[in-house]
Image (cartoon, rainbow, N blue to C red):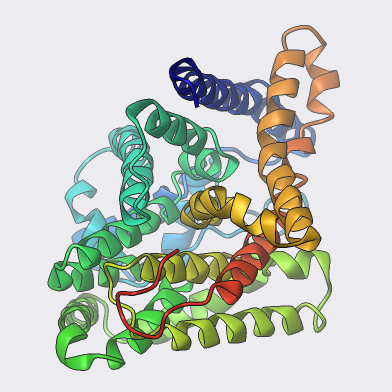
Length: 435
């Protein structure tokens, strides 16, 4: 490539990332949010602070300051009063179904303990800036883990695409703790690769505040650890000790909380109607078959590569596979959980030419994945532009178009990762594989 071409490529990448991010945020502010407000007014639905952090913060404040059970109906009604602006009324059929109850492990309150004496308005603004910083930090960490030493402008484009993605945007607007969990997982993997296993175990224990996002990663690391216990046990010991301390402290503050947490999870599944991505497209029980096959295939690939060292490209590739399958099978179709797709998408962007060179099905699968990934950026940019020239009511009718690929994208990414890792001929000896 000529010197001029090398300069132009980062410029166009940064420009594309800027346009995509601006289009997404303008779409949210000028199309999606106005539509939601209009729809709420038409159906008399309440709208309060709409911060997913608020129910967790209320639960932490009431438990730590007043000794109240965060899972209790009384605390749930206080959460609703802030989140929706008033408690939900079962007699109103148009009221939201999501109860905004405290459906997290009790030990999440220890992360929020420094904030319980502050007004929530301050906590909300501060948490927004923290999440923005974590999005950039998470992107930078995965670039390092995947050994993608990009130039400064190329890194800026990755940050721009991340900040402008539908998953990160929704997580930031809702102040979803999935973004915090994704950052904790990235940090844990980064320090594990850097041979700091004790810190890695501590960070992974904190990430279990959303166990549905971390269970498959922990399963893979357990298999990997048992393959070389003498050298790898330290992260596991740190993880178990930290979890023991968190459980003990939780039991001290809220005795017998585990049963109430389990009940809260069951209720959450009922009132939100949360189901995996594939089940939204294919009804059960048929949707369970590909999910089970994906998990089984991922476990087999993990088992084959359990002896790979943590500082190898194979190890990071398996991590990407695990995260892609996690999003594919997680029991909710919320777009913000797709923040975990960042590392597999980065890896596939690098490996795309290799997959395409193999055969026609590989090229088709990559093309489908690329279209699904680009669709929200392209369509939101178009709607954002139209919002400046067309009547708002007309543009708002198309509010759902950028969301059309939310369901099939995790399926495509998981399929690509399974195909890629299955076709790779990983070397059996640790430290010899390449991605």
